[in-house]
Length: 346
Ligand code: BGC
Image (cartoon, rainbow, N blue to C red):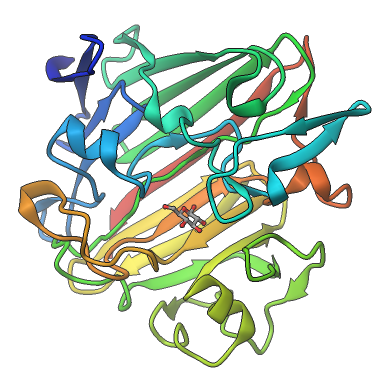
């Protein structure tokens, strides 16, 4: 595996970039800062390789950026209302970093720390990254060790395996935060991409994007992606949920049988991305907060809705919503997640 120095942190530690290449010529690059996927090159229907994930050219971009491009987010991907929860009768206050709420692990989440990388092993196109988060970090109880393994399979799948442990009861709900644009050019928006999500419900949110606790049927609403639909078809409809999210920024309630949960297709390139996961929820975020101010790879400014995230995880705010599937992790238990983004053409 090719390893290069990507940059240096202010404290002098080096950040490395690892290049994973499979037998079909697809290439994924990952840095140990934030366990971040910095590029992912997959073929279009004519075999042309293009990068399909947004990101920066330099470490500085990732250090200063606020969009979580390509990173592993945690401990808790998504929001916890007012950053508060109680567990086993104890109250915890997490860092508030999104209005009055806690988002994506706080000010210095898993995306803003250096992970320990263990490349290679038996499979050349596989990289294990590990981070130990200390007891009390961003307000969370327990020392948590999270291992994330990225594998680029010969079938053009980016496979992500998670393994997490703790020494005290805590909550753990990490996710991968890549922004995809399958068109081959980040100058294009994702509004023409066709999306299918195999889910009958979403968890509606309030104006701070905290779930109300209900599950709403997607039928007869802009949230109905049970059949492939262009993302732009209804994104600007008059709809309270879309207004709160400034577009799509919601959790779809998956059916719970680990397998295919979503499909994303871009007709000009013919690229198709199929998402498989064992998680209960899928946050579809249509890049509504991108506003052209982030200058990405090759100097391209990432305009409104030029990338979208399909984040596999538990529902938002589960510690305060006992009716949702919980993510409490106790000593002796192991958190596991497997998610696959599979690329093909048609
Ligand atoms: C959230 C958005 C948030 C974005 C930050 C997404 O996962 O759902 O609300 O603005 O991350 O990049």
